[in-house]
Image (tube, rainbow over all chains, first blue to last red; front, side, top):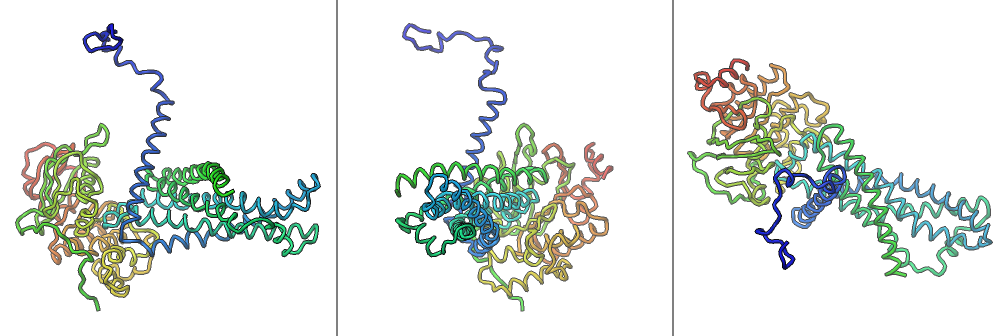
Length: 283
Length: 262
């Protein structure tokens, strides 16, 4: 090192070629591979998202395909989401009654059930159900199209696959999630009330009146419409995983599994952020 | 009644004279990692001409076709299609050029969620907005009749054989009345009779439409039947090119061995 504290080319210590090529242990091995894979994945996701966004915002718009996807993703998820919502309503009703009885707060039952379903369980459960059903479906479908050259065939036909395949599916996910959440909420509230009336008679009118007492309608909008963000996550991850698939049947299987796992994880992580955001802004 | 149609967007492609090549590849290089697939190859195809690109598996034949239609970007070199350089071209302009090309994939690549008729009408639905649904359907029927598949209009791709899928893929490739037809292994995996039928079909279409075609194949018999110009690739380079008779007269050891084995 020079007297000034800076190393110059002339004064730099000489290093033998052998020593120069010794890899830094901290930058090699599984940890380095994991880190490079992590950054490569996020980088590719960023490029993919940009391509989808630019394709989605420029004509021609694929209205027909969007409507087909709304049916495929929305209508066909409806029975599953309704059934899951109904089951959650019964479970929450039984648990809430038991817990509130222990603390002598049975009168709080309707409000507890309404809040826990609409603010917490309805949105996250719908997000995870759709992530499982739709995430796997989109991931597997696009991966299968990729490995059988169908996506190349679309591109060769001068049709932008990011617009036709990805943008339509992502937009459909964003649009249908809030409506599916409303369905899950309604089913959960109805079955929750019904489970309660089997033990202790309570009219539905009383249940709703007590449950929504003191709450404004707008207070329930953010938890419901935050699921549009879940839709964005599910659609984007599933399309991305599907359209980057390599390999044959094994690649298709991996794409479907990864779509569900990554989308579900990101939905839960997004929920943490969104709950904090909603509490800070709307309460 | 089937009406004539024009693509929805008028192309602003440079005019190509009858003599100028419709596809010209110069010094094209492409590597995947450390593996060099194309090592500076140059080829030309004129209007009405059929070029067969021959070679062993893994010599970059399919990569060449994919570069020509813009599915893969080359590392360096020039690719001119209908007088337009496509290396580094904007996606919108590439789309206009792609409308002038038809591509038959090795495994047909039919959309498995659509019927045979919908597969053929798919490019028309996206690019010929002025056509009514009935006109598109009529056009699809006409194209399927041209390839001898008129009875399969409502069948799903999974319900027809590999040879039939190739025919449907060919009908789809012809939907936009292309000036250039790219065929990736059109007879691969087919029995000799089906292969012969596909070759006959390609010859008939060439006679009727006067397209420029590039056929990638390692089926020498098929290449001899449908092509009037052949290029033999090895290790990413063109070893020799010319008519089939020129190849037969070649003194190059690899050419002799290839012709003997094929």
